[in-house]
Each structure stands twice: as structure tokens, then as C-alpha cells.
Amino acid sequence: MPNQREEVADDSPTDLPCLEKLNSPAGSPPTASLSSLMELENCVSNLSLAHEIVVNRDFCFKPRSPPTDSLEGRVTEVVHRAFWDSLQEQLTSDPPNYNHAVLLLQEVKTMLQSLLMPGHIRLRSQLDEVLDMELIQQEVDHGALDLHRLAAFIIGTMASLCAPVRDPEVRALQDLKDPVELLREIFRVLGLMKTDMVNFTIQSLRPHLLQQAAQYERAKFQQILDKQPASLDDTTVWLQAAVSEEVSAFAAQSDSSGSDSQGPLSATAVLNRAYMRLLHWDPQDQKYPETVLMDRARLDVLGQRLQMLVLEASVLLLTSTQCGVVVFTLQGFVGKLRQSITALLEGSHTREADLKGALLGVGEMVVQQVTEALRAQGAAVLPQENQDLLKGQITDLWKHDNPVRILTGERVQGFLRAMLQGGPAKRSPELSAPLRLVSAELAELGTAFGRIVHFNRTVFGPFYAPILRKLLFPPGEAEAEEDSR
Image 1 (tube, rainbow, N blue to C red):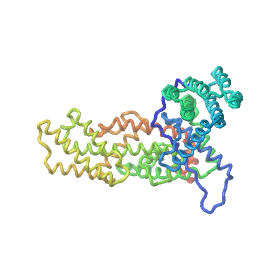
Image 2 (cartoon, helix red, strand yellow):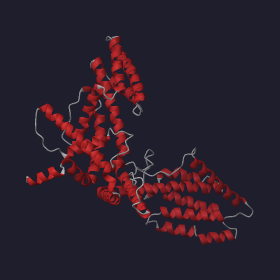
Image 3 (tube, helix red, strand yellow):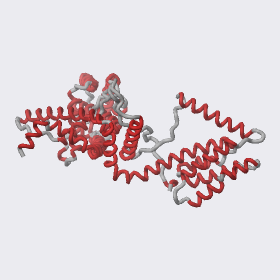
């Protein structure tokens, strides 16, 4: 029943991500009719919506309301005010003019009918009986229309259909006496109830969508690919870059171990490396792989969290090196220190200048808290040169080629790769004490990242396979491979 559903989270996204549509090269003739383009757009929209419903557990629709300070918002406000002012004039004229009011009652009846469930047989019958438009028109013709009686029935019906979260708003309707204000508020609350119904339906269908999600998304993407064969071009470039990085990493590992083995690259390792690259994607690079485009916003957020964790772990590592482990064993010290670091680094990932300034503040704060902790224990504070050195080391973390930042980043990424591979805990890289302080956050990030990757591989694995086969086994090598069997 609709009135049994829970309140929808307020922080859910209101905009759906959509796949980029590849345009024809400049000067080339159109290759698709308008109907084909509309069909393609509908396919992309359905794919984006289904994906968002499945992967975002907090997904919900919100009533659309343009910003009040925007042109759309101002125009909407003027038009609505003019409409309700006109209705006010009609109802206060002598004799009253109910033409627009009757149309609004018909719209209210339609909206209430859309909220009824199949089992609401009696309520549907009452709705048809009380809001009988022919009878209402006869009452208007004879000057016997009682708007407050009809409004009382409408409010009672809304109260029986609304979600618990809407009860206060429905009860507030009973206190309104002005018919225009009452009708306006009835429409507003009915709009909220319709949105609640849609979200309730989504929540009810989610378990069924989860069972068919991969097959549905794969089929929809195949339809897009049939209409736009170039829809895997950026994906191919993405995988090609991952192959090149894996070849370089494989060669470096062979040189360090003194092995000359040149076995074939693992497609799984290449794909995992490709996914890891998404966490460090240049925001200015628009050639994002089409198969992961619907998750770009989520992956960008994870990438920002990863960058902040690397910086935080680097600060803890430098602080531990300069101060020893004495202060780190003090109760509550690490928690307070981390809280301060996170607050100062918040939002500093967008520009290097912001990050440099934030890290300068972090260095000052770290030295201050370390000094206070040492004094509280009666220990000697750090010499001034050590304090200046620690501040400088922390500030230098803004540089991408900073050795401490690089080392910490490699260890963190190794931790995430081990989680991505799904291997036992013993395969995870050994983390030093400062890095273990953020291991819980890393595990949480890795779980969220792994969930996105697993679903993406399930859906788009059949599209990746032929691309990887061509990249890892060029035509000549593939034929030689076949001949050797």
C-alpha cells in the first residue's frame, strides 16, 4: 500500500547521468532519420534510468522546482500567480464564475485516480460518485456548487492514500478557508503524493530489476551500438592505454626479478588496471569510455576520496617519522589529528593552489597539536628545525611527483587492486602503521569501487572481450596461436 512506504532520502540525486551521443563528423551527411535519433535517445534514457535505479540504492525522483532566482523560476512564478489571481476574480465575482474551478476539480479527480491501487474498488466508486463532473456542472448551472464540501471529501481521500510523511501537510489543508488557496495547496500536495507513488513503485520493482539488470543493460547498449557503431571508440582507446601500462609494468617486474619470461598478458589484469585509471581521470578529458559513462559521477567522487586519503596518510606518515610513535599512542590524539586534517583538506582537490594553501595550514596545525601533546606528557617538544622541516615536508605534498605522496599512492592503489582481484586477505599489501590508520576508509572505498566494477564487467564483459582479444593478440599472433594447437 502506498501509505506504508518510508520517507525518501533528501540527498538523492535529481539528475540522471546519460551516455554521450556521438555526433557525425563535421560536413558529413546525416545518416539517421529524426525518428531513429529519437529512438536512440529514448534507448539511452531508458538505459541510464534503469542503471541508476539498480546501482543507486538511494535513488528517487523529486518534484521539479526551478530555482527562484532563475529566468524559468521567475516566469513560472508570474504565470502561476496570474492563473490563481484570475481564479480569485472569477470566484469573487457576482455571480461567481466556476468554469475554471470545474476544470481544476476534474484535474484533481484524475490525479486521485492515478494514486488508486487495484484493490481500491470502494474508494474508486466513491470518487466517481462524489466527483461526478456532470452532476457538478448541473450544480454550477443552478448556483448550488459547494466547493468546501467537495474539498473536504478530496482531503479525506488524500489522507487515506498519502504516505505517512505527508500526513501533516494533508492535515494542514483542513485549516484553509479561502477556496483559491485551498485548491492551490491541494494541487501542491497531490504533486508530492504522485512523486511518492513513483518512488514507492521504484522501490517495489528494484528486487525484480536486480535480477534482470545485467541482461537488460547489455541489450539496451547493443541497440545503441547497432545505431551508433562508433560507440565503443573511447572504450577501445581506454583499454589500449591500460594494455600499454600493463606491458610497461610487466617489463619492469621482469627486469627487477631477472626473469626473461614473456608470457601473455592477463586480460583480467589489463581490465583491472583500466578500471584503476578511472580513479585518476583528468576531468578535462572528455573521451571517457562509453561503457562506464553512467558511473562517471560516482567514480569521480571515489577518485576524490582516494586522493584525500593518500594525502591524509602521507601527512600521518611524515608526522610519525618526525615525532616517533610516542604521540600516536596517546588516547584520542590520532582521531583529533585526522579530524583536523580532513577538515583542512576538504574541497582542496580542485586546484593545486588551493591544495598548496590547505597543506600549509595542515603543517601548522600538525605542529601545534604535536607540541601540545608532547607538553601534556611532559616530554621535550620538537626542536624548531624539526618543526620547520615537518611543515615543509607536509606543504610539499601538493606536488604530484612528491616521493612520499607517490609511495603512499602506490601502496594505497596496491591495496585497492588486491581488493579488486577478490583475493584472500594475505594478498593485500602490507601497510605501515600510518596507512593502517586509514585502512577502514580504504576498505570502504574499495568495496564501493569493487561493486561498480563487478556490475560493469558483468554487463559489458561481452563487449570488452573482442577488443581485448585484438589488443592482446594481434592478427599475426592470433594465427600463430591457433597453428600451435
